[in-house]
Image (tube, rainbow, N blue to C red):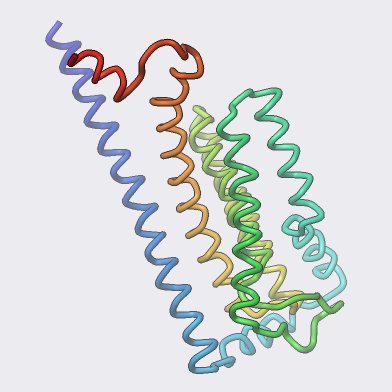
Amino acid sequence: MFRGIKSRVSKFWAGIALLSVEMLIVFSIFFLSLAGFIFIARRVFITGSTQFDQSVFDKLQPYVNETNNKIMLFITFLGKHDFLIPANLALIAYFLFIKKHKWYSIKIPAIAISSLLMMFVLKNLFGRERPLIPLLEQAGGLSFPSGHALMSMTFYGLLIYIVWNSIKNQQLKWSLVVLLLALIFLIGFSRIYLRVHYTTDVMAGFAMGFLWLVISVQVIRRIEKYSKRNLNPIVKNPEEPVGLEQKLETNS
C-alpha cells in the first residue's frame, strides 16, 4: 500500500517538474521572441540599418541556380495562402468529423484568422517596402513582417502543439516536431532566397508568429477550461444548479 502511494506521489512530482520545465522553456522563448521583435523593429525603422539584410543576399548569391529556384518555389508554396487555407479547412474537418475534438476545431480557425488580421495590421503599421530586385518575380504587398514566416509559425506551430499533446510514441512525436520545425524555418529561408523579403522581415515574422501562437493557445485553453467547468454541465443538465448557484443553494 505504502509503495503504491509513494509511487503515485513520485509520478505526480515528476509530472509537475516536467510541466515546469516545459513552461519555463516556452515562456523563455516567448520573452526572447518579444525582445527580438523589438530589437529588429528598432534596428530597421529607427537606426535604418540595412547592412545585415544586404550581406545575407550577397552570401546567398553563389547558391542561386535553376534547381534551387524550383526547390525554394515549392517550399515557399507551403507557406502561401493557396496552400494554408485548404490545409486549415482540412484540419478543421478532421477534428470535427473524424477525431471529434471540438476544441482543436475551434483553435485552428481562431488562430488562423487572428494571425491573418494581425499580419495585415503590422504590415500597414510599419509600411516597409519589399526588396527592389526580387530573384524571380515581384511579390505584392508590404514587407515587414514576413507573412509567410508569421503564418507558417502559427499554423505549423499549432500542429507541433497538437502533435506534442496527442502522440504518445516518443520517437514519432520528436520526428514530427523536428520535421515541422525544419519546415517552418525553410519556408522563411525560401522568402529570403527568392528576395521577396529581407532577413529581418522573416526573423520578425517568426518572433511575432510565436508570440501570437503562445498567447492564442493560452487564451483558448482558459476558455476551454471555463467551458468544461461551468458551461458544459449547464448544457447537459440545465435543471441542475452549477457553480455559484449550487454553492448558494447548499449554504441556504
